[in-house]
Each structure stands twice: as C-alpha cells, then as structure tokens.
Length: 622
Image (cartoon, rainbow, N blue to C red; front, side):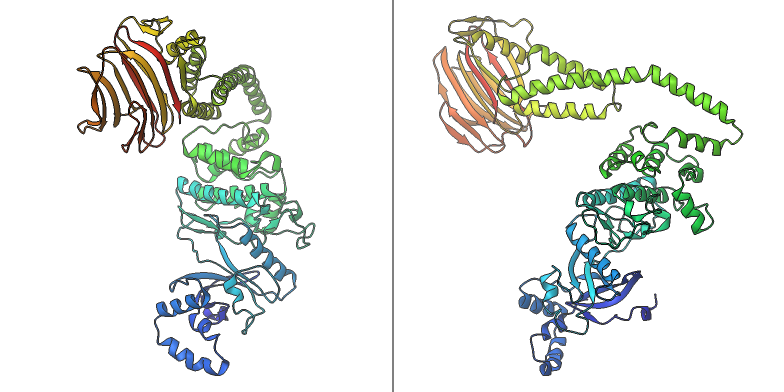
C-alpha cells in the first residue's frame, strides 16, 4: 500500500490522529486512527504557550496523557484504542457529501448491533448534525473543521471468503442476515452487499459500508429513476434495472449471491459471462438462468442449493419475503433437516437446469415425465399431508384452550380425557419427527405453560368433595384407588402411596390437612433427575419429624422431633423456593436451604397408612 495515496496520514481530525491509510472508495478514504492526546490537551492553552506545553506533555507516557485527557473531558479515553475514520472527499452540499452524511445517519440509527460496525462520532463538515460530544469539543478549530468524517470500529476480515467450509459460510451469512433483519426493521436497505463489506471473523462477522443504503421512509432525491447503484456481480434484477425499485428483498438476493460465492469457494452465478454488458443483460433477463452451484461444485449440498436459489429468485415474490425466513431455512439446514424442493425452486427453472445438464433429452418427454410426477404427488401426498397437519392443528388448538383455562383459574389441571389427548398428540409427533417443526415447537411451548400453571386444589368435605376425588384420581393416574369418600373426608381403606407432579417452575406452595398415624410420610423433591434436594415430613416412633437432605449428605433435622398422638389431625403448609423453605404450619419458620433449582419442577410423594383421612390437599405454582 502506497502511503502517498493517503495525504492525511499524520493529520489530526477532531480528537483523533490519522495513523495510516486502510482503503479508498468512491466517497473518500478510510484511515486507521488513535486519540491525539497532545493536540487535545494543548487546546485549552493560548496559541503562544502550546509549543512549551506540548514539549512537557510529550515527556509523559501515553497512559498518563490518556488519563489527563479523560479528566479534562470527564470521560475515560483508553490509551491503546484504535478506530477507523472514513473521510469524505466531496465538497459540502454536493450529492456526494449528502450521501456521505446519509450513510453516517443510517449507521448511527442502526445502533449497537453485534454484527454491524458501530459509528461513534460524526462530523458533518461545517453543517449542523447530531453527533458525539467528544467530536464537538474542538471541531470548531483547526485546519480540517470543514471536512466531513465518521469514526467507526476498526475491523478487518481475518478469513478468505473463497476458502470457507459450508458450515462456516452459512455461519457468516446467517450473522449478516440478522444484521440486515435489524436494518430492515429500521427502514434501511443496504444495496451494496458483497464480501468486501463483510469484516471481522467467521464467528463474529461485521457488516459495514452503508454508503449507498436506501432509507425507505425518505426520498431525498439522491437516487434517480433508471439509475443503477451497487456492485454488478451482486445486484438483484431490479437493482440492475432501476435503483428506485430496490427494497429489502433486493438485499436478500444480494446476500444469496454472497452465500453462493462463499459456498462454492469463489464462483459467481454469472461468472461465465465474458464482459460487464453481457453480465448486466443476464441479470436483467428472466430467461437467462444463472448457473446452479452444483454446476461448479459436483455433489454440492442440495438443501443449501435450494436455499441459495430461492434467495436469488428473479421475481421478488418468489424470494424469501423477509430475512427472518432466510435465517429460518439456514437454521433448518444447519440442524440437518430436509429442505424441500417445492416453494423454493420454480418448475420452469428446474426444467432449464435439467436441459443444461442433459441436452439430449427431448422437451416433450421431460415435460410429460414432470407432469406425471406432479399429478401423482398432488393426488397421493397432498390430501395426506394436509389432512395430518389439520388434525395436528385441531388437537393443538383444543389443548391450547385447556392450558388457557388452567392459566385463567377456571380449571386446575387437564381432565382424564384431555390427558389422553396430550399423550396421543405426543405419540403422533414422535412418529412424524422433522416433518412438522411448527407443531413440535407449539407442543413444547404448551407443555412448558402447563407445567408452570398446573395446580391441584381439593377439598374432600362439603359440596366439592366428589369433584375433588375425581381430580385426585386424575392427578395420581390411579385406575382403582383404595379410598372411599365419607363425611369426614377421603378415607384410605388400605395403605396408600400417592405420586403427584410435576408442578411449578422453580417454586411451589403446598397445603395438606389429614388425620393420620404411624407410617405417614410426605416427600418433596425435584422431578426428572437424581434427587438432589429432598424435604421430608414423617411420623415414626410416635414423633413428627421434619428432615432435609442434599445430594448424598446425611439428613439434617429442620425442626426438633415432636411427640404426637395416634391418630393426629395434622396440617402442613409450606412454600418451597430456590433458596428457602417457608413453613406456615406446623411451627412457622423460614429455613435457608436449597429447595428447587431455578426452572425445575417438583414431585410430591404422599404415603398414608390405612384409615387415614385426607381432608384437604392443595398444590399451587408460586
């Protein structure tokens, strides 16, 4: 790189000194820069004292200079910080100058996105424009006060985009797609996507250069009808025809070309065209088919090829309609899911590709074969697939209503029939893994909501006794329970062990009223794992004991054993959270022990001797 091409090296702009040139483009040069502490600190002194002050400041280390400058400005300035500064070479109030300011305004509006190069300060070149307080500190002085520039992250690309593995190419493009999705949500279309504008690393790429970005909410006259703006190899058909027609789907096309080039290690869709005019004509024409990736790379991944071709579809309505759709297909491919042909490649494009691959096949034979296959698939598969999807959606809608009734408090838990419907739906989804991802995700979400809201509220006396007995039978899954309902409550006709749960997500409230005797046991522990935190009430040896055990450590007594009559009318009420056990009855106390891990559910085991009478049982998420 010839430093003579960068005449401002060594000069000071605002708070920064330009160290070396990094590159140049149509609107100016890009320099690497650092804070100019000597210049900044000498500004407060009269002109005739600056030389003397400068000599004293040079004797200080850069760390000390940074500290003094930070004290003066009231903000920390790191001594080793480096930035990229883009300097506008257009005169004030020209179209180039206005386009530069538009780029700066767009970059600042996009904010601090992890995959977009950040802009920290902007000088509008003598014009009033919101920017950095640091930049305004002394931009009113100096030789370059009328130069427009912006201060950005210093970022370089540390990978060769023509030597990436497929998963690396997809990683880069997916990250940039999230950046563009953010830009589109702010009404900004980039219009110049190409590998040269993707900096950073494979793991953390950065999108830069919004120099020709389009703000869809504004019309400032910078783009004329019929004008062509962008880089030819990555232009969408509408961009190659009329820049006024460009929208967010044009960015999707260009990013598809970038993925094409990275995935094929350097090839481009119209790489075979000899000159600019023939390439431009090919991009504009719907009849000129771009080469498919497998024509350059035999054995190219078919699913990824379908994603690329959909992104690069000639007609905007055939492409992904939003970056989120593009990202969704990239994620499905990364997970190894099947990317279907239909909806991604038009039949006409597929036929053209087959003719290029097999030129001796007659059009008539090929058309007849394709038609036969399409008709057969339409007749045999479409009703089955559509019918199954409708069936799953109907089941999910019904179960969503059940969960909604639980959340509203109308019911406490699914009925026995609804529980069977949940089980049947789970079996159906297991047998259709990968075919209905939306339904799978919706079932998982309903399961999480059910765990977080399901409760058991029973009273075995009064008007609700019969309904409470049915609720308990559903909650325990008991087909022939050994209990009978009496006026006093639910009487155990034989020793009974009840398994309840899981309930709650990280915390749980429980209340139990029972007449019982020797052999009573109430155990609470986490669900779905080796027991780690267990809390136990038990009547043994004529005493009520309250114990806690963590992992395989010896059990500890939370309250002293209490002698009780036989039988005893016992009420236990407690709240179990991640870091404490709050007992309301008996002997109200707060115990600082590990309860449930965050997000974990609890199961309850209740052991009742014969002739025990269960009066009340409540389990509620907290």
